[in-house]
Image (cartoon, rainbow, N blue to C red; front, side, top):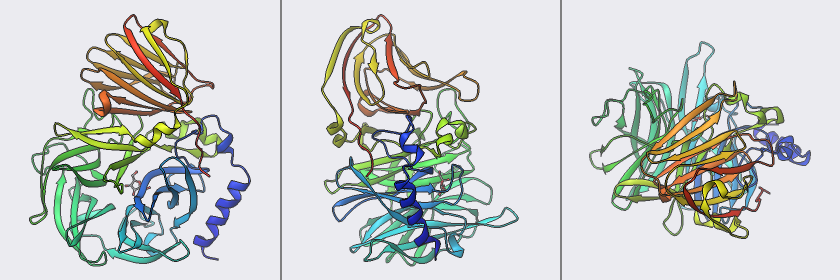
Length: 469
Ligand code: FRU
């Protein structure tokens, strides 16, 4: 039997056997996470024929970065998700080392996936093919094979196609590493998704005045909001700054104008997309009513990844909440998608000195906080948010040695919106001007304690659990 028909059966068996993940107190109550194994990038995010589809990089066989297939969930409302059979398995010569990240489009009524077939050789070399797969009448995906070979002038690190329609053509951004080992983003064009024409590099180290060196740009995504074109990307190897780009693998955005005719993207400086400890490989899609949504991987392949306690229960990592993108003064804003408000239970209030606020159950919580001055939020002595006049400092205890590690968001803060799950916190700053996303692994039930003399106004809700069916 081909592996692609066998593995969905393994998944079903895992589900029927009640995987250990689901009884782990750190397993999310309302975020998407793997029922077993390792989850990384969101893939193929699309609203198609009345349902949202979200695919994901998944090693169903263990917690290491291996054997990547495309897991698949679907949902009518962005809240209640259901498991779908695995969409892509690495069972062909051209994708044998992994069905790597990619996107989905509606090709005249056919749900079509464009992904990277990753191939590693015994001597450590690798190559990559950009491949197509089309949904069949049974809901499975038929592979059509590679449509783009490795372009000249690049190493085997060419991957993560994101495709969209503009006018009469399809366009693709593709992450790449050139022969000088610098990270680049390529723009390609096609009339039919099968034949592709490489229009060249539109962004990357050394291009358009961007001096920052990097060795690879992964998971590019390009879209417009109003008159502005945004490029989201994950430049690897950026130099760390004092307060920015502190993650081993950061994610960033650029904004400007894309000249399709000349394949030129004039853009400004690189901005950090999320300033927390875990956020990577985000992907966006457009809703039927024109909203631009984003989901990111709340994980980073850093030195502490395998120390996460969930590994002992056979699973690792989760997605961010679904976010809606907006723009103000040329900047990219992210806010939790409105649909999430349906998870709120009874509203509670507090106004007064931070230190007199009640201790709040942080397990599944939405907290809206406004105030000024010194306020500290302590999550079960594992994670601490210090709100000061010059911005935020997020402290988290290292899983290796318990020492505090830090991430920063600089600027005046007037309002915070925190969305918490069993082992994650997403902090939205000033109605989406900044975000800090982080996992943390508290003893349960986790509690949030506020300290500081400043006055705060808090509105908060316990969030109802919403598990994948
Ligand atoms: C980003 C990434 C992608 C690749 C995928 C493999 O996290 O490295 O570049 O396609 O993960 O799982």
